[in-house]
Length: 237
Picture 1 (tube, rainbow, N blue to C red):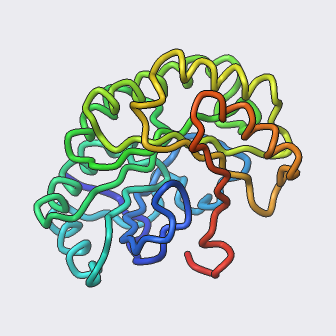
Picture 2 (tube, helix red, strand yellow; picture 1 turned 120 degrees about the vertical axis):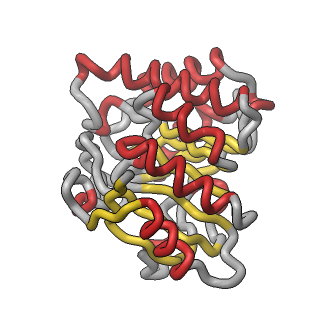
Picture 3 (cartoon, rainbow, N blue to C red; picture 1 turned 90 degrees about the vertical axis):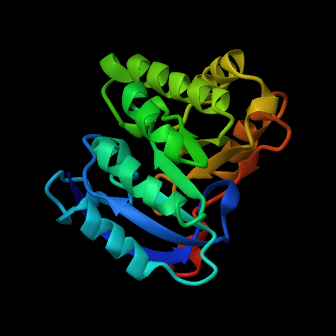
């Protein structure tokens, strides 16, 4: 089995509920989607990065692991593009008793379920229509897949949280409908966090919009947080 890795590096986690933790990032190459705010466009081509066999990739992870690393984050691109390889790499990391973390758009339930047993922490990202992730014709299918991945993760009792990236283009009514659908599918007690992440450097949302979006989530989940990409502010990758 082969895997294409774009980069492996240690940094401070700048997103989500575990921001601030020392993390080894394993960035997989390849993502077929087109979010306008993507900040890792260089890793999107399926032929980007470098190809390794699984043993070589595991050795690369081992050689880059630093003392006191809190978790290993499988990111991209989108890790589900190479789901079989990701499962093998995550299994290797779990053998070291280090938590594994999946950062994915959760676009395919079968691929998600393949890697889920080897992940300890799961971020379920829901895309808004304005993200330009997919065209409007395929958007509902995307949301259905993400919703099914969410239900699968909480059923497996993984540490699960939700993230939604928002921008100045985000419409309040659309966001509200998405949040209602999420909490019609799962209960607040089944998730470990809900993060609203503003875009950085492009179409940044106003404070008023962020507060309004916060107010949409709060009645469902009082521990909702607005968390920007904190690593950008300290110059970390």
